[in-house]
Image 1 (cartoon, one colour):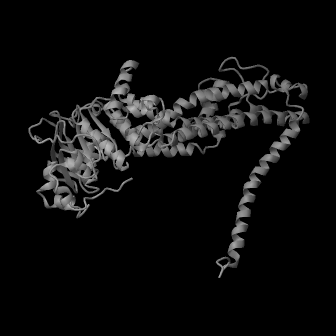
Image 2: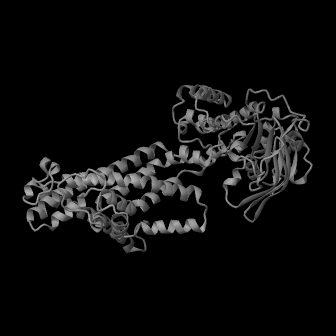
Image 3: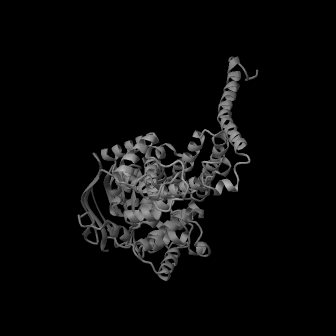
Length: 291
Length: 291
């Protein structure tokens, strides 16, 4: 007597159907993304060229408009954001994982960091406006933008760094302490190097989020139209998402569709590059360090 | 991993007058020198009325034990008898666990290591430790051995080179790794990794070496190498070893301490404990009636 199909005639069919439904779900999300990118490429075709990358924005002609100010502004912005976020984020993670006892205080901080990771970025934007732009009189410059974005991505960096530190086996801590290393030496020589790939991955993902944020920059009042490159940290600036948003608001359809699409492609390429680095780091170091 | 073997019969342990002729040895080291002056030797580590608590749990009860210099002391007993806990009291590794408490005294060269002024970092340089599971750092072989001296402040390359070679030779690993000191320690076999951990522990130039079941995860051949090594090292170090296998205790140790349920039941010269135990529980354990 065969074992197949005995007693439960629908079981096999249901199982197969379920597999197809799941595959469809997976395909649907990818399909939407592909359609989006396809549309963007179609609109941007012929517009995304060297001139586009090296020109400032133009109010006169869509053909003379470029992404230069936004591109440089974005690079400036995420470099400063990384500068602020990495030390503070890693420091906070080291404190929470290695120093803070399993106390109520730690639990309180931990819960709040997890909550902060879920706060909408516009809220941070308003905070940045009140604190950095007005409170500290920084103006809507690169510094205020970077500080605001640092607030947005800090919880992500802290959580990723904590995760990476937690993944370092306890035997490494014990071995280091047993050799007469101090806590600081153990953290500096053993734990941070071992956790570095995880921390770097977290930082890069945080940076790519900062790169794509428009709302907090709108809230602090960053410019949408800039005809110069920021020379100092308090100079006016614009960033890619903001520039794209500004173009889509333009009444001229050439701006609305083609120039904006070209800008979106530039932004997407930057994001994909950052994510590729993160994936590479995870692969490269994940292979080398195995416990 | 070899399961802890039990003596098949009393005769196997008692028929032979000296451990050197026990059947499992297949080594070249001359084990004929038996220490018979345990009590006349200087006592390196002396525990007096040690009680140890994990939170509310009373783990060690009134343990008093003297560990003579340049001898191997084996701590035996069934799982959960807290022999490892006692071992970890000697270099204060238990300090790493929150909520632990110790009363009584542990003297190292007549100085109480639990007095408030103790420099724990300094203590751990003098009391090295080898763990049950080999735990090399995910760094090169050289860096593993050089870590202890480095955190102690030795920076000179020539001096470090010298220490690394000396310790690897002492741990009987030099010949196997001399040509690949820069290779990752994680590429070594299990037995080699454990000998590397021993070399690493020797690099801080300790007086006392604590070993927590150093061979329990190794095959018989690697185990025999570690045991030979222990025998050679006792000329220079005072060794305390926790072991699950009574044969190993009989082979390598001069003094044996039997722990049961957090109490020290019996301590004496290894030959005495194995041939004419004074306590009923000891006899039951070493003959394999429980544990």
